[in-house]
Image 1: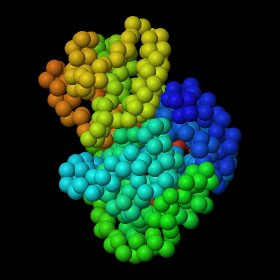
Image 2: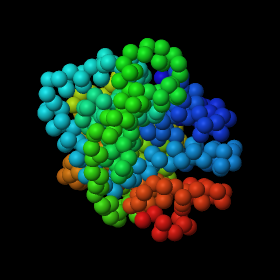
Image 3: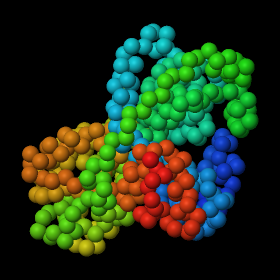
Image 4: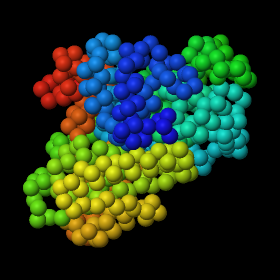
Length: 437
């Protein structure tokens, strides 16, 4: 677990080490080396927001010139942008959920065998087996290895990309609906017109540490000429995205909680979930709640339960977030963080929390599109029936990502770059949005 920090203190300590070598990231980030020394290994902490992208970017640019770390800044911005892109196009997520379940039911016996072999690390290519086993045992894969594995899954093993995305989402410490779904769509050729990703032996040899290729079994299946022939033979899929939906009223209000901080007559409870573990550094920090509830994510995000490393990581991050929450709000008066039982489910846990604490309002950070957000309608109905209001807040940067996600990433990145080059923090309130459409 120490290799991938799950607590805020450990994550910031890891960042303090990595920031010294950050200028090397652009040149070395694609190298797949045991131990992953050339990447921060903070993606899990960022996914659960034990640390925030904005604070890492601000500290990075306080230490280095923009030009020397631009690629790392860009990678830190991608995750937030993709979450916003998916939230503005929710049917991309729901379509994946439906297609995943249909695909598994419709696989024939031979495809089911290939699927089982790939997930178990028992396919015909030794290095792909290494990646599958690393993913299941650690909850992590280098991004380049993820691309190779996904390409092998889709284009060589000819398995549905939806099932590969399910395999990753169940195991990755940093797996979120947006980054995972959209990355697999890109590899399969469904995200960017004319762009598919094909794994090639020459690329593996160039970027893999030699120790990972000592067992060369199956590499001939990835010879460049063979893959080129495959690429020429396989028809490119059509790319069609739904238009971005309009932003809801609550999205335009970054705080989204009205006058609650001053309304001491209403009993307020906090909802701590796995998509934001920094409530003490959020629009909620000024509230005066009477209690908080930390709710473990549902154990399954696909057909099967999440992998053990992912669950352990999430539990450690949530416990750390709860302890910091207790220290922050407990210093102001009576306050207690309670932990729900995972078998309760989200709806029963929040309703039970509201009833036990006699709450008028439950406040939390708005989850991104994905399994947690899918449950919000049922939560709102259950709480409303109990006379309890649910209020969800957003961070300023998330709101700006949502506003910009109507267009492509690189238009948005040009805007980010202008802001950061002039020494501003990641705040675009003074920028025109015209170039993001």
